[in-house]
Image 1 (cartoon, rainbow over the protein chains, first blue to last red):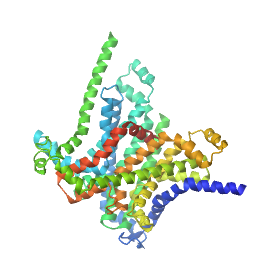
Image 2: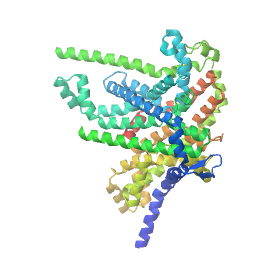
Image 3: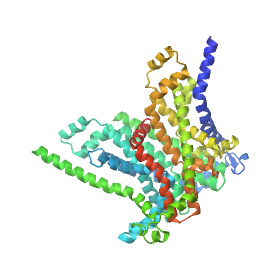
Image 4: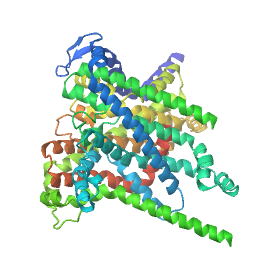
Length: 295
Length: 282
């Protein structure tokens, strides 16, 4: 009886958890663990079965003389800092405006969210046209020098080109989260503040923002990790160029492995990338959790 | 009296806010305008003036690209891969999450922790080894392979979402069904699963948007298999072959973004709700 019960329990465990566990193991777990091994090998990818153990060579090479890798890290950090600030600033202001009684509120929400449902690859191609041809025409009509810049042709403008498209794509998503939080702030609290003579912005600063800190946590976390991992947009908008000046970290790893065919070196970089992403995730969760308690 | 003035001032302020928001919204829509307008122009006209309405509408651009990228096939592949993956994800992740909630053994708790931890692993950190593993298991270049990949990568978030929801499903309903002679599998499929509808909608939406738009995984797993080429792959390949042929490229882009935009406009309410609850819980 008890044996039968045990067997039944085991079968149920296998039926419910088994298929998911198998898919997760072969697609995520095993490749991830293999990464620790392949990081120490020379592996050209063309012959998938042949990886030669070379010890610390890959890591030495990355830390000692891979300027492009560090340049792409610097680029990614700068990109992340700038886009997190602009995206969240814009999304929060939009959230404030569109949670008020505007007549075209629903239409506006739809419009701001729209770019988000389209993938980074297609958005990048669309904006490639805007930057090269659309801006040129606007420049000719208006004579504004801003539109006559070679937007995707120099490192500086290429950076801002990526920032513009990234913000355009993600602001609506964050706006939706901010709206949900702002609408959830109890009306009597903000009304009490207004009766006490607080101005609109004072109410926002002293009542709304402290009460929506959980949403702020979520949005900061999402934008930081999305910006740090930016790849699709990079590929279709600038291809990392001109040269390698707008290469994100994710793109650098991709190019090392799939363009240069250095899979071993690419894996080593990818594992460093993983460490950085987890560090950011842990720091941010820790920082914002602390803030929530204080508020 | 003063109240009326205050209200009037307030509505004037709101009007200004609304006007600014509308201008900003038009700016947000401008890229779509550029794509649509230029997708029906001849290349020569685009080069001279990329902002005005076309002098002559050239719908031939669309029919040309339709054939070049084999749009109906590509659309079907995207649909097939997305539908199968999302369906599989619903089944596997709801079952896994249910078991983890109802039987919190050490194994299941550890597994759940692994799911959460795995969500910080960026795709680039596993993609090369994944190519190796999927080649060995013959999961590359075929439909089963790409679907299994999406199951593996999508499982963690979906399980976490279902887990959070199932915790709130009262055990009493299940106990009553067991007393009535329902098997453990019957309890799940007939009693619990129908109750999961709200979170299932969220899981469907988040995964559909991701899989439909995904690029790098299909490149690595589907590769050059023409029988599985998805929309992002087809567009990228097209751009590689027809550089600077903007007349055709823009028609292709307009065509390619249409399905997902239509889907969004139809299911907008669910999508926005799904994303809000998904990102707050996930």
